[in-house]
Image: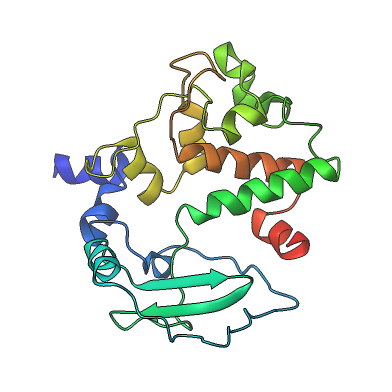
Length: 221
């Protein structure tokens, strides 16, 4: 009973979800809340004259199989040259974007700067997020977070159920988690891949623009 109470109300209350779903998956959008990023004027990729007539080498097939690929596309000269799908996936099935979202968020940061919502890359996080106004965190800039050199203590671990990454993925309080992060080295000095940096940028965007990241993307992209 004590263990169950800790799981439900303690720092590991995300564990039941982790134990149920076990690992991050392409179909995880079905287990999380979703917002729609509306596409106003959809422009499909034009197909090349020799579309899907290119044969993948045995080596390429081996590598794609090794990574358990569901889809593989080749774009050449602005045209769709090849698209292949496996394991029941096709061009109509939705899936998690995972780290592709980092590029989208980075684009939106650039747009926010061009529109004056963010002054420049050197502007500090503390101008938007009050939790970053104390200690070493007050020195972290937008540029530091964009370049994965924020200096924040973060272990990008996907194997441990007790890692901060698992807590961020399955937990319900991302903003609170971000607010607890501490600086482990001087910001701006070293590259250290940390997915939470993109979450921080998303929070900055929402504060700077006054709307959600999904609405901003719908409007500007």
